[in-house]
Length: 370
Image (cartoon, rainbow, N blue to C red; front, top):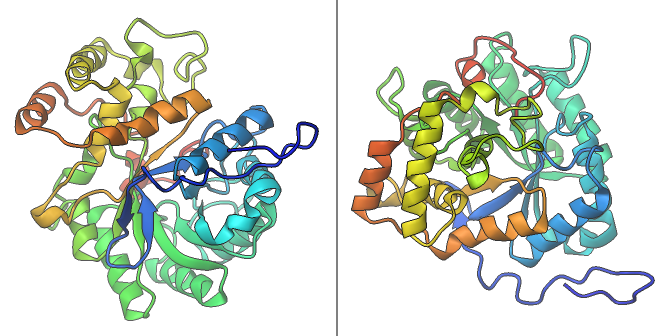
C-alpha cells in the first residue's frame, strides 16, 4: 500500500497482492474465493474507530483477500457495518470493484416489527434493497438467506432468491446455517429453477463439528453440500475466539467473554480450557499459533478427492496485526495423520455452537447471531 500525498492520503493497493493468496473454486461454479475471507460480524460497527476499520480492509486487500462478508444486522447498531464498509469501499476500492466479491445476508432479527426477520419474499427483497443503499452499491456478488425460517415455506424463500438473481441485484445466492437435509432440498429446488445455489456458510471449527455429523438421511452437511455442487465457507473457525491464545491465562478484561458477547463465560469451562491448552501445544510443534492451526484445520483437504474441502475460512480482525497473523495460517495447511488423530483425540464438542437452534429451524433466535 502507498499513499500519494501526506495531506490527502490515497490508498493504492499492493502490486503483488495476489502473489501469496490461494484461491479456491466455489463448488461447481466458476467463481473463486480466497482461502481466507474477511468477515464484518464484529469490529466494524459504529463502536469501533473508522480509521482502524479502514486500515484492516486496506491490509486485507493488499494481502489478496478479495472477499468481504457482511450482513444487514452486523454492527452495532444493526446496519452500521454495511454503512462503514460502503464508505471505505467508496473512498478507496471502488476502482477495483471487478476484483472484489462482496456478500451480504438477511434472516436474523434486524429490528422491531413483523418484517424484520425470517425468509419471506418481502423481507429478503426489502432487506437487500436496504443493504445496497447502505453499501452504496447496485449489486452484491453473493446474497445469503442467513438462517432457516420454519414459518416461511421453503419455496417462497427459494423463489425470492431466484428472482433476486434475475433482478441483477445479486450475482449469486447462498444459504447459511441450514441443516444437511434442508440444504439438499433447497439446492434441488434452485437447480430446477435454473438458478443454482452457490454456497453454504455454516459455523465450523475444531470445537464445533456439527457439519461433519450425519443428518437424518445419513449424509453430513459437508457431504450434502458437495453432492449438491455447493461450496462451503466456514464462519467462526476460531470458535468465537476460544481457539486463540487469549484465554490460556484467564479472561482478559477487554475480551469478548468479559463483555458478555457471543463467547460466554460458561463456554470457558475447565474442560474447554484444558482442550485449548493441549491444542496449543500441537500448534507450537507445528510452528503456528493456536489460531493459525485452527484456521488451517478448517481448510484441510477432506473427502474423496477433496470434494468436501472447505472453500474459504471466514475470519474477523480487530487490528492489522491480528489480521496478518491469521492470514499467515496459509503458510502451513498440511497436517500429518498423526497430528489430525491427536487433535481428534483431544478435541470434542465444546458446547459453543450458539447457532444450533437456528440450524434445526426451531426458533427465530437472537438478533446478535452471525
